Image 1 (tube, rainbow, N blue to C red):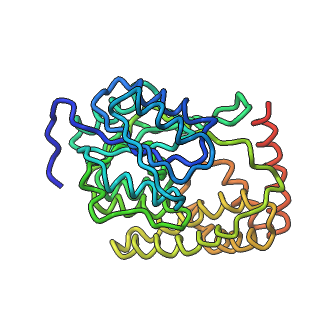
Image 2: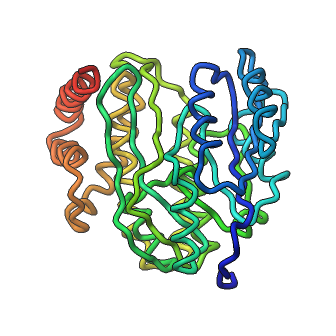
Amino acid sequence: MEKIQKKHNPLISLIIPVYNGEHYLKRCLDSVISQSYKNLEIILVNDGSTDASLDICEQYLHQDNRIKVITQNNQGQSAARNKGLDVCLGEFISFLDSDDWIGEDYIQNLYSILVEEGAELAITGLQIVFENSAFVVQKETVRKVLVRDEAIKECCMNNYQSSVCVKLYKREIWENLRFPVGEIFEDYLLSIKVLEKVNKVVLSNSCDYAYFQRNDSTMNKKIDKRILLMFQRFDEVFEILTGMTEKFEAYARYNILSHSIGWFRRTHSDIDLQKKFFKKIENNRDLFFAIKQKKYGKFFVELFSYLGFPVCRFFNRLLMRHTIRLREK
Protein backbone atom coordinates (compact mmCIF):
# COMPACT_ATOMS: atom_id res chain seq x y z
CA MET A 1 0.00 0.00 0.00
CA GLU A 2 1.16 3.53 -0.70
CA LYS A 3 2.28 5.67 2.20
CA ILE A 4 -0.51 7.67 3.77
CA GLN A 5 -0.31 11.40 3.12
CA LYS A 6 -1.63 13.68 5.84
CA LYS A 7 -4.84 15.40 4.81
CA HIS A 8 -7.05 17.86 6.58
CA ASN A 9 -9.68 15.78 8.38
CA PRO A 10 -10.51 13.10 5.78
CA LEU A 11 -13.86 11.35 6.06
CA ILE A 12 -13.84 8.43 8.51
CA SER A 13 -16.66 5.86 8.38
CA LEU A 14 -17.82 4.35 11.67
CA ILE A 15 -19.92 1.20 11.13
CA ILE A 16 -22.26 0.14 13.95
CA PRO A 17 -24.42 -3.01 13.63
CA VAL A 18 -27.58 -2.68 15.72
CA TYR A 19 -29.74 -5.54 16.96
CA ASN A 20 -32.12 -5.25 19.93
CA GLY A 21 -29.87 -2.83 21.77
CA GLU A 22 -32.45 -0.39 23.09
CA HIS A 23 -31.01 -0.41 26.61
CA TYR A 24 -27.47 0.49 25.53
CA LEU A 25 -27.72 2.19 22.14
CA LYS A 26 -28.13 5.79 23.36
CA ARG A 27 -24.96 5.55 25.43
CA CYS A 28 -23.10 4.26 22.38
CA LEU A 29 -24.43 6.93 20.02
CA ASP A 30 -23.88 9.76 22.50
CA SER A 31 -20.20 8.77 22.65
CA VAL A 32 -20.01 8.75 18.84
CA ILE A 33 -21.62 12.11 18.10
CA SER A 34 -19.46 13.68 20.82
CA GLN A 35 -16.19 12.70 19.14
CA SER A 36 -13.59 15.47 18.95
CA TYR A 37 -12.90 14.31 15.37
CA LYS A 38 -15.90 15.71 13.52
CA ASN A 39 -15.68 14.54 9.89
CA LEU A 40 -17.46 11.24 10.45
CA GLU A 41 -19.84 9.11 8.46
CA ILE A 42 -21.83 7.21 11.10
CA ILE A 43 -23.51 4.16 9.58
CA LEU A 44 -26.13 2.41 11.72
CA VAL A 45 -27.18 -0.94 10.27
CA ASN A 46 -30.39 -2.07 11.94
CA ASP A 47 -30.29 -5.85 11.63
CA GLY A 48 -34.00 -6.61 12.01
CA SER A 49 -34.36 -5.37 15.60
CA THR A 50 -37.68 -6.18 17.26
CA ASP A 51 -37.35 -3.68 20.12
CA ALA A 52 -37.09 0.13 20.04
CA SER A 53 -33.61 0.17 18.48
CA LEU A 54 -34.79 1.43 15.09
CA ASP A 55 -36.77 4.25 16.74
CA ILE A 56 -33.63 5.30 18.61
CA CYS A 57 -31.58 5.20 15.39
CA GLU A 58 -34.12 7.41 13.62
CA GLN A 59 -34.21 9.80 16.56
CA TYR A 60 -30.44 10.31 16.28
CA LEU A 61 -30.71 10.49 12.49
CA HIS A 62 -32.79 13.67 12.87
CA GLN A 63 -30.33 15.10 15.39
CA ASP A 64 -27.11 14.61 13.44
CA ASN A 65 -26.74 14.79 9.64
CA ARG A 66 -23.61 12.60 9.76
CA ILE A 67 -25.76 9.59 10.61
CA LYS A 68 -27.11 7.14 8.03
CA VAL A 69 -29.60 4.42 8.97
CA ILE A 70 -29.90 1.21 6.98
CA THR A 71 -32.48 -1.45 7.82
CA GLN A 72 -32.30 -5.08 6.75
CA ASN A 73 -33.89 -8.37 7.77
CA ASN A 74 -32.06 -10.11 10.56
CA GLN A 75 -28.95 -11.72 9.07
CA GLY A 76 -26.45 -11.40 11.88
CA GLN A 77 -23.66 -9.05 12.85
CA SER A 78 -21.34 -10.08 10.02
CA ALA A 79 -23.94 -9.29 7.35
CA ALA A 80 -24.65 -5.95 9.02
CA ARG A 81 -20.96 -5.05 9.00
CA ASN A 82 -20.70 -6.10 5.37
CA LYS A 83 -23.63 -3.84 4.47
CA GLY A 84 -21.82 -0.95 6.14
CA LEU A 85 -18.66 -1.75 4.19
CA ASP A 86 -20.62 -1.85 0.93
CA VAL A 87 -22.01 1.66 1.34
CA CYS A 88 -19.38 3.55 3.32
CA LEU A 89 -17.51 6.43 1.69
CA GLY A 90 -14.73 7.15 4.18
CA GLU A 91 -11.01 6.99 3.46
CA PHE A 92 -10.68 5.22 6.79
CA ILE A 93 -13.00 2.74 8.50
CA SER A 94 -13.71 1.77 12.10
CA PHE A 95 -16.22 -0.59 13.73
CA LEU A 96 -18.13 -0.21 16.98
CA ASP A 97 -20.61 -2.56 18.66
CA SER A 98 -23.87 -0.97 19.75
CA ASP A 99 -23.55 -1.86 23.43
CA ASP A 100 -19.99 -0.47 23.66
CA TRP A 101 -18.89 3.14 23.80
CA ILE A 102 -15.78 5.20 23.07
CA GLY A 103 -13.87 8.07 24.67
CA GLU A 104 -14.20 11.56 23.25
CA ASP A 105 -10.81 11.44 21.51
CA TYR A 106 -10.97 7.81 20.37
CA ILE A 107 -11.10 8.47 16.61
CA GLN A 108 -8.75 11.46 16.78
CA ASN A 109 -6.11 9.47 18.68
CA LEU A 110 -6.22 6.54 16.26
CA TYR A 111 -6.15 8.76 13.17
CA SER A 112 -3.28 10.90 14.52
CA ILE A 113 -0.95 7.99 15.23
CA LEU A 114 -1.86 6.20 12.01
CA VAL A 115 -0.90 9.24 9.92
CA GLU A 116 2.10 10.08 12.06
CA GLU A 117 3.62 6.63 11.55
CA GLY A 118 2.46 6.09 7.96
CA ALA A 119 0.64 2.92 8.99
CA GLU A 120 -2.41 1.29 7.42
CA LEU A 121 -3.84 0.05 10.71
CA ALA A 122 -4.00 1.64 14.17
CA ILE A 123 -5.01 -0.32 17.29
CA THR A 124 -5.89 0.89 20.77
CA GLY A 125 -6.39 -0.81 24.13
CA LEU A 126 -9.77 -1.30 25.77
CA GLN A 127 -11.60 -1.47 29.06
CA ILE A 128 -13.87 -4.42 29.78
CA VAL A 129 -16.83 -3.10 31.75
CA PHE A 130 -19.15 -5.62 33.43
CA GLU A 131 -22.88 -5.07 33.82
CA ASN A 132 -23.99 -4.22 37.38
CA SER A 133 -20.42 -4.27 38.63
CA ALA A 134 -17.66 -1.78 39.40
CA PHE A 135 -15.14 -4.38 38.25
CA VAL A 136 -13.22 -3.13 35.19
CA VAL A 137 -10.43 -4.90 33.31
CA GLN A 138 -7.88 -2.73 31.54
CA LYS A 139 -6.46 -4.30 28.37
CA GLU A 140 -3.69 -1.83 27.64
CA THR A 141 -1.16 -1.80 24.83
CA VAL A 142 2.26 -0.20 24.64
CA ARG A 143 2.81 2.47 21.99
CA LYS A 144 4.88 0.90 19.24
CA VAL A 145 5.16 0.52 15.48
CA LEU A 146 5.21 -2.96 13.95
CA VAL A 147 5.97 -4.14 10.45
CA ARG A 148 3.72 -6.89 9.14
CA ASP A 149 5.64 -9.92 10.42
CA GLU A 150 6.05 -8.34 13.86
CA ALA A 151 2.33 -7.51 13.96
CA ILE A 152 1.41 -11.11 13.11
CA LYS A 153 3.71 -12.39 15.85
CA GLU A 154 2.21 -9.99 18.42
CA CYS A 155 -1.30 -10.98 17.33
CA CYS A 156 -0.51 -14.67 17.79
CA MET A 157 0.88 -13.89 21.24
CA ASN A 158 -2.37 -12.04 22.09
CA ASN A 159 -0.39 -8.89 22.89
CA TYR A 160 -3.11 -6.73 21.40
CA GLN A 161 -6.82 -7.10 20.70
CA SER A 162 -7.88 -9.35 17.81
CA SER A 163 -11.36 -7.79 17.73
CA VAL A 164 -12.21 -5.89 14.56
CA CYS A 165 -13.29 -3.07 16.84
CA VAL A 166 -10.66 -0.96 18.71
CA LYS A 167 -9.05 -0.29 15.32
CA LEU A 168 -8.86 2.25 12.52
CA TYR A 169 -8.26 0.83 9.04
CA LYS A 170 -7.14 2.36 5.79
CA ARG A 171 -10.03 1.74 3.42
CA GLU A 172 -8.01 -0.35 0.96
CA ILE A 173 -7.62 -3.11 3.54
CA TRP A 174 -11.29 -4.02 3.08
CA GLU A 175 -11.17 -4.27 -0.69
CA ASN A 176 -12.10 -7.90 -1.51
CA LEU A 177 -12.38 -8.69 2.21
CA ARG A 178 -15.70 -9.26 3.97
CA PHE A 179 -17.02 -10.96 7.09
CA PRO A 180 -18.20 -14.59 6.76
CA VAL A 181 -21.98 -14.55 7.18
CA GLY A 182 -23.73 -16.98 9.50
CA GLU A 183 -20.57 -17.95 11.37
CA ILE A 184 -19.01 -17.05 14.70
CA PHE A 185 -15.43 -16.19 15.70
CA GLU A 186 -15.09 -14.16 12.52
CA ASP A 187 -12.79 -11.68 14.32
CA TYR A 188 -10.26 -14.42 15.04
CA LEU A 189 -9.74 -15.35 11.39
CA LEU A 190 -10.15 -11.83 9.99
CA SER A 191 -7.50 -10.42 12.31
CA ILE A 192 -4.94 -12.53 10.45
CA LYS A 193 -6.38 -11.83 6.99
CA VAL A 194 -6.23 -8.09 7.70
CA LEU A 195 -2.57 -8.33 8.69
CA GLU A 196 -1.79 -10.04 5.40
CA LYS A 197 -2.76 -6.80 3.66
CA VAL A 198 -0.74 -4.25 5.67
CA ASN A 199 2.86 -3.14 5.74
CA LYS A 200 2.84 -1.32 9.06
CA VAL A 201 0.70 -1.33 12.23
CA VAL A 202 0.80 1.20 15.05
CA LEU A 203 -0.35 0.42 18.59
CA SER A 204 -1.71 3.19 20.80
CA ASN A 205 -1.12 3.39 24.54
CA SER A 206 -4.63 4.82 24.96
CA CYS A 207 -7.39 2.72 26.48
CA ASP A 208 -10.52 4.56 25.36
CA TYR A 209 -12.74 1.81 23.94
CA ALA A 210 -15.22 0.47 26.52
CA TYR A 211 -16.25 -3.12 25.80
CA PHE A 212 -19.47 -3.87 27.67
CA GLN A 213 -19.90 -7.43 28.90
CA ARG A 214 -23.46 -8.18 29.81
CA ASN A 215 -24.10 -10.00 33.05
CA ASP A 216 -25.70 -13.03 31.38
CA SER A 217 -22.91 -15.58 31.83
CA THR A 218 -23.00 -17.93 34.81
CA MET A 219 -21.24 -21.11 35.86
CA ASN A 220 -24.05 -23.18 34.33
CA LYS A 221 -24.84 -21.21 31.18
CA LYS A 222 -25.72 -23.46 28.23
CA ILE A 223 -22.88 -23.63 25.71
CA ASP A 224 -23.53 -22.77 22.08
CA LYS A 225 -22.47 -25.82 20.08
CA ARG A 226 -21.26 -23.50 17.32
CA ILE A 227 -18.16 -23.15 19.48
CA LEU A 228 -17.04 -26.31 17.68
CA LEU A 229 -16.35 -24.01 14.73
CA MET A 230 -13.39 -22.76 16.72
CA PHE A 231 -11.51 -25.93 15.78
CA GLN A 232 -12.07 -25.11 12.12
CA ARG A 233 -10.79 -21.59 12.79
CA PHE A 234 -7.66 -23.06 14.42
CA ASP A 235 -6.90 -25.04 11.26
CA GLU A 236 -7.58 -22.09 8.96
CA VAL A 237 -5.33 -19.70 10.89
CA PHE A 238 -2.59 -22.31 11.14
CA GLU A 239 -2.75 -22.90 7.37
CA ILE A 240 -2.58 -19.17 6.60
CA LEU A 241 0.35 -18.53 8.93
CA THR A 242 2.46 -21.52 7.99
CA GLY A 243 1.73 -20.81 4.33
CA MET A 244 3.34 -17.39 4.74
CA THR A 245 6.57 -18.63 6.30
CA GLU A 246 7.73 -21.61 8.36
CA LYS A 247 8.94 -19.29 11.13
CA PHE A 248 5.29 -18.60 12.06
CA GLU A 249 4.59 -22.25 12.96
CA ALA A 250 5.57 -21.87 16.62
CA TYR A 251 3.50 -18.72 16.99
CA ALA A 252 0.55 -20.32 15.20
CA ARG A 253 0.71 -23.22 17.65
CA TYR A 254 1.00 -20.84 20.60
CA ASN A 255 -2.05 -18.98 19.32
CA ILE A 256 -3.99 -22.26 19.24
CA LEU A 257 -2.77 -23.08 22.75
CA SER A 258 -3.72 -19.67 24.13
CA HIS A 259 -7.22 -19.72 22.63
CA SER A 260 -7.72 -23.35 23.71
CA ILE A 261 -6.91 -22.45 27.32
CA GLY A 262 -9.32 -19.52 27.13
CA TRP A 263 -12.11 -21.69 25.77
CA PHE A 264 -11.31 -24.50 28.21
CA ARG A 265 -11.91 -22.01 31.01
CA ARG A 266 -15.19 -20.78 29.52
CA THR A 267 -16.74 -24.16 28.60
CA HIS A 268 -16.72 -25.49 32.18
CA SER A 269 -20.40 -26.46 31.98
CA ASP A 270 -19.91 -28.78 28.97
CA ILE A 271 -17.51 -31.58 29.84
CA ASP A 272 -17.36 -33.11 26.33
CA LEU A 273 -16.55 -29.79 24.70
CA GLN A 274 -14.03 -28.98 27.42
CA LYS A 275 -12.25 -32.27 26.71
CA LYS A 276 -11.80 -31.24 23.08
CA PHE A 277 -10.08 -28.02 24.08
CA PHE A 278 -8.03 -29.91 26.67
CA LYS A 279 -6.70 -32.13 23.88
CA LYS A 280 -5.52 -29.03 22.01
CA ILE A 281 -3.79 -27.85 25.20
CA GLU A 282 -1.99 -31.18 25.56
CA ASN A 283 -0.84 -31.10 21.93
CA ASN A 284 0.62 -27.59 22.12
CA ARG A 285 1.52 -26.93 25.77
CA ASP A 286 5.27 -27.18 25.16
CA LEU A 287 4.99 -23.77 23.46
CA PHE A 288 3.86 -22.05 26.66
CA PHE A 289 7.20 -22.48 28.40
CA ALA A 290 9.23 -22.11 25.22
CA ILE A 291 7.75 -18.70 24.44
CA LYS A 292 7.54 -17.67 28.12
CA GLN A 293 4.44 -15.53 28.08
CA LYS A 294 3.50 -14.21 31.53
CA LYS A 295 -0.26 -14.74 31.48
CA TYR A 296 -0.86 -16.14 34.92
CA GLY A 297 -4.47 -17.29 34.62
CA LYS A 298 -3.54 -19.31 31.57
CA PHE A 299 -0.30 -20.41 33.23
CA PHE A 300 -2.19 -22.24 35.99
CA VAL A 301 -4.45 -24.04 33.52
CA GLU A 302 -1.36 -24.99 31.53
CA LEU A 303 0.44 -26.22 34.65
CA PHE A 304 -2.53 -28.25 35.92
CA SER A 305 -2.96 -29.81 32.48
CA TYR A 306 0.04 -32.02 33.25
CA LEU A 307 -1.98 -33.54 36.11
CA GLY A 308 -4.73 -34.69 33.75
CA PHE A 309 -8.17 -33.52 32.72
CA PRO A 310 -10.11 -34.13 35.99
CA VAL A 311 -7.60 -32.17 38.11
CA CYS A 312 -7.35 -29.36 35.57
CA ARG A 313 -11.13 -29.14 35.32
CA PHE A 314 -11.50 -28.99 39.12
CA PHE A 315 -9.00 -26.17 39.59
CA ASN A 316 -10.44 -24.29 36.64
CA ARG A 317 -13.89 -24.28 38.25
CA LEU A 318 -12.37 -22.86 41.44
CA LEU A 319 -10.65 -20.16 39.41
CA MET A 320 -13.87 -19.31 37.55
CA ARG A 321 -15.86 -19.02 40.78
CA HIS A 322 -13.21 -16.66 42.15
CA THR A 323 -13.37 -14.55 38.99
CA ILE A 324 -17.17 -14.34 39.11
CA ARG A 325 -17.09 -13.26 42.78
CA LEU A 326 -14.66 -10.49 41.89
CA ARG A 327 -16.96 -9.22 39.14
CA GLU A 328 -19.99 -9.26 41.45
CA LYS A 329 -18.38 -7.02 44.08
